[in-house]
Every structure is written in structure tokens, then in C-alpha cells.
Length: 330
Ligand code: XMP
Image (cartoon, rainbow, N blue to C red):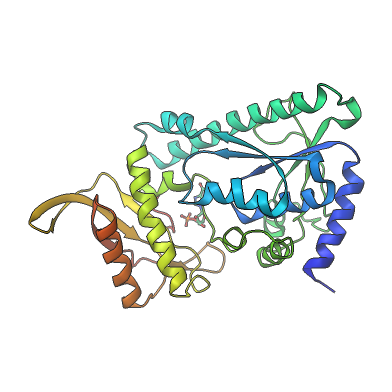
């Protein structure tokens, strides 16, 4: 019978058998898949695993801390944090095209991850480490739907090894460990709970890899990120307080950074930015409908954002389904 406990037990045995006394690297993104995959491998082989968290500075409020503090506390994992936010912001300076943003973020990510991986390989092979204990594996949080989608139908194999990890150079190649290859998202969450991971990670809504960079319509900079991060944190807190997290598939909060509109606060005229609320319901993100949220909740969100975030003087609601719109604005 399927239980999260059985999955953990099975995977732990399989990972131990596969890895032997080699070392393993796992990249954490802040999302549920990489967190659960990493925690499973940690359960199996303890300090033979090193996790890498590239902080690109584009996560939401509290998410980097969730990885660096709560995840580490829950798992005891050895974590290497790369604070790359300055490199990412420099590379993104002045860029407004959504696809260029994605390309830049992807390339910066590989650069940061590659450097961290090299340092780990060097550390493990230097000193007392013998060739037997070299770093040979990379963990990936691939889920069953990804396996099916990429045509790798033989999803029964829990662990697939193959070389040529996308984006990494030839001299830095690893075999893959994909302990979530047979699981659906809800099963991954159950395994995450079984492993005692932070609730905020286990139940996080889908969040794009390029993060807040594609929720700022316009160029990305430190100040704009700070505005969006505050507004987004207000939205998340209010939705959670209203008990509606499970009703909503995803709730992008978008800053129209190049748009200004006139407002009035106290005696003064303001010329601030609009924030767009984009709550959607969906099954698989291929199609989506806008969420009919209670007016009281929308009102609370609007007044808290305009009272709490000085640069924002207008909050608008996106009433478009997908298609014709996409879920994200970029
Ligand atoms: P759209 O906006 O295309 O989004 O309706 C569908 C789903 O994909 C997510 N998304 C991304 N995820 N990198 C990601 O990892 C991306 O560049 C990206 N763009 C969109 C989006 O949040 C939604 O869940």
C-alpha cells in the first residue's frame, strides 16, 4: 500500500545502495520538489550530501531564510549558500524583455551553481578524501508528470542515471538521482510532511524559477524588488489568514514598474505604481480561470498594500482566464 512512510523507506534503501560511499550534490530552489528530494537523500546518506542554494535575490520575503534556516534545522543537511543576488541584478540591469530576463537568469544560475559544485568537488577530493569518495551524483527533483512529458515513459525506475547534466560543462558531469520520479505533486507533499519539512515549503504554491524578476513588468532593480516583495508578503499573509490557500492554484502579485498613476494620500498628490493581483484556479497550469475571491479579502489586501507600501497607490485585479492571457504577466 502507498504510504509516505513506505516511500521514504524504499527510497532511502535504494539511494544508499546506489551511492555507496560517494558524495552527492543537490541544488535547492526554495520549492517543494528540490527540498523533498534533498531531504530524502539526506535521510539516506547524511553528510555524504551537500546541498547548494544559489540565492538569486529574486525570491519572495522570507523564502531564502526558509531554506537557510528552517530547512537546515529540519533536516540537518550540510548547506552551501551562494549569495549571488548582486551578480543577478547586475546582469539584469535595464533588461525589460521577458525572454531575455529568463535567459540571463538561467545563465547566471549555471555560472553560480557550477562554481559552487567545483568547490565541493575540490573539497571532497582534497585532504583525506580518496577517489572512492568522490562526488559522483546530482539530485534532481523530477516528478512523474515531468517524466511523462519528456517522453521518458519508463517511469517505474525510481532512480535514473544519465550523464550530461544540462548546462554543466563536460568536465563537471554527474549521474542523476531522481528520487521523486514516480510521484505526483500531492505525494511529494506527503513525503515532505513525513520528513518533517517546514510547512511553508511543503505547501508552497507553484512559483517560477526566475522568481520576482518576471513579476516586475519593466526592468528589475533592488528598489522595485523591495516594493514587490512587501506587496506580495501582504497578499500571502491575507490569503492564508482567510484560509484560502488550498482554493487558489497560484497568486502572482505583479508590479507595473513602468506605469505611474495619480493618487491622493492625506493632503498630498502621489504619482505611484499599480500592483496587479492575479489569483487563479487551475488543475495543471495549462489553462486557468481567475479566482472569485471574496470582496472583503480583496478590500483588505488593497488597503493594506496602499497603506503599507509607500510607492504603491493603486491595486487592480486581473479578470482574465488562460487562454487568452497566461498566468504570469511575463
Ligand atoms: P504561464 O504564465 O505560462 O505559466 O501561464 C504557467 C506556469 O508556469 C510557471 N512559469 C514558470 N516556471 N520558469 C518556471 O519555472 C519560468 O520561466 C516560468 N514561467 C511561467 C507559472 O508560474 C505557472 O505556474
